Length: 345
Ligand SMILES: [Cu+2]
Image (cartoon, rainbow, N blue to C red; front, side):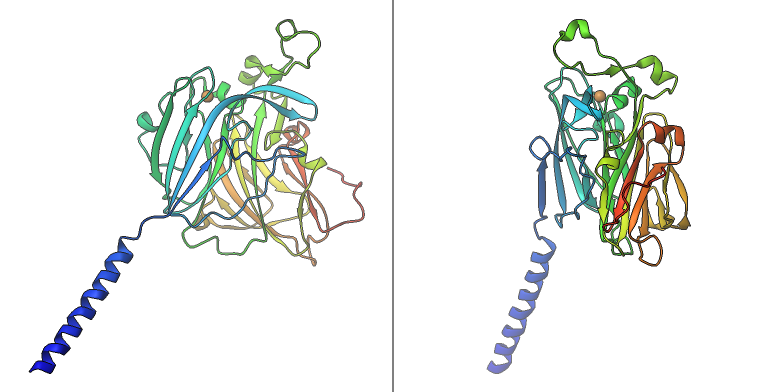
């Protein structure tokens, strides 16, 4: 009798211990990753750093994003008086995983009203995307339910003006089950247009270099002065994206517009996978060119196999070639090719 009581006690203790362990596991504090993009600023020289690091394992991603005016370089030696998220154009690159809770705080450190619009969020727009007055801030959160390569931008009217001034950045949401392939290199490219005209020398003084300014009439006629990847015309011609022979390369292409499509293509390669909107459930195979609409994104994968598109130089372009002529062209350098000067594009 006594033995049975002891055994029962032991069993009960073990059972409650197991229940406690389960409860503890269920109640595990969510892990939080915080990035203040006032302090963490991506390198823009010699070119905007297009490389993308893996997402952190944290369940909650907190981002502080300041809005600030900045003089940016939209082509070699060409400065522009822009409006920015985080001081660069495009702004910070955010990366989260499907299912993560995303907490956003946007602080307006500029002298005029702005706002923010996350294409990755399902959220009441009148609350999260309301106007943020100078010195004011907004905080909201959403669960990243949909995988993809998404645009984030200022939505303050006239939206064309806030976009042509540089107010956009990408957020990448990794699918819950991963991308289905192992990429050796990952890059983010944001295409956009500038409509720049000469700055006002009368107010800027004679000795300083006068940044260019927005040309509203040109924007309404869709007559862009520059079409760019990651904020600066031709920057990846001078500073190619470097990969190794045999690498699978995954490119997250987001088109910030404001008004042009991007007909994304790599000269000398074929995309073995394209995920429209960046969702692997939409997979296309063996694609030459795929259009990313203004306000959209897509994921492109290709392998620079030594039996195919191996060592060499490969131009990536929008195949709408008038736009490539205005700056939307760059180079992927695979391995260390000896011939560097014979590109035809
Ligand atoms: Cu704005």
